[in-house]
Image (cartoon, rainbow, N blue to C red; front, side):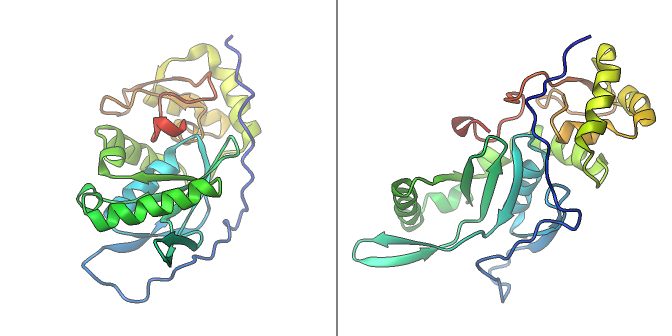
Amino acid sequence: MPAISLKRQLLSRSPGGLIHQRSREVIHSTGGIMRGKFPSRKTGRLVHYEGLLERDAIYLFETSPLIESFAEQPERIHFPDGNKLRRYTPDFVLDLHDGRRVLVEIKPTRSLQRPEVRHKLDCVEAELKRTGQAFLVLSEADLRQQPRLDNLKWIYQHAAKRVESFMQSRTAMESLAGGFPMTLDAASHALTMHGVEPFGLLLDGWLQCDLSEPVNFDTPVTLSMESDHEWFLIAPKYGF
């Protein structure tokens, strides 16, 4: 029977959800931007987003087994711009399973092509590099790769809202390891007796599947034997 990787870390999440206070509150809705709240399985709370691109980013953060947790508008940063000191609030902060922390800006490509926007982000990146903080700008080219995005939305929408316990998932995987690969449909039936389901196991990194083809109940799933999860990388440059 294949060995189950024990490099995974037990996720410690508050049953009531992670407490988070945004550093910037949106008071008025402007510019026709769709704003809303995403019911996060990973953080156990409603995560605020501004615009559909941020909502798509949340789907990737939620489904990545390499991201332990995340939060929106995490902190206010002051950065020099010539002889002025300006303020900036990142869209998200990601806490990765390897202990790294990454600040993230979500921007459409058309915005990144504007000189004033590019200048501001370059100044922010220089300041964060000086203070030793990782900073990443993600556009629709990174976030809306298809069929990956639609696949992950489908998987997420089929997953149970609860996060499976580490020991329960491990026991199920050890019991059924010899039967993989199997289809999502077969896995759903086989895992029922263990009180877990394959969609949650995909999100938590126990199982993996091919995201380059449309995913459905006939899609084969296999054991995820490695801790680097190369099958799912949002930002390969940063290793997650």
